[in-house]
Length: 157
Image 1 (cartoon, rainbow, N blue to C red):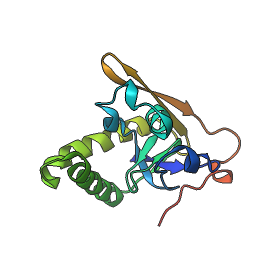
Image 2 (image 1 turned 45 degrees about the vertical axis):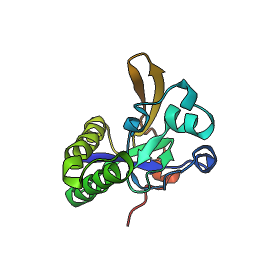
Image 3 (image 1 turned 120 degrees about the vertical axis):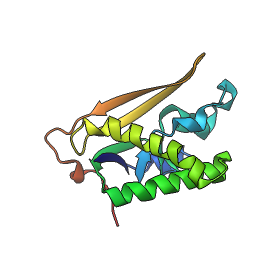
């Protein structure tokens, strides 16, 4: 199984996001956060988070780049529970049990995206508001000659 971890090539995320994600934390698109936004919401650091921020599932901060890597079943289970708890606390889900299917779906979508890519493939997201809602596009930057570990830290416990 594969998922994506936050990476940083420099300190720019610390300056452009209200709440920057932590290097090495597991990430998902997190586009659900913007489902009821309008053009008036797209200002300053909120605009940056909307435009190209992945959502860290541990700090719930945003990052610009993620890298595909392996995830263990126990790690995934903990992430599902953490995200479900976030849905209860931030979005008013009635219980963790009620939020678990939505949390699982969000993580499954990200795993599906990562499944087709080699480890260390870099992913970016770009969003725009349309009449139909939020449109997301993803860019894939494949590892070339240099090892990603020469530039970024995936982190871990």
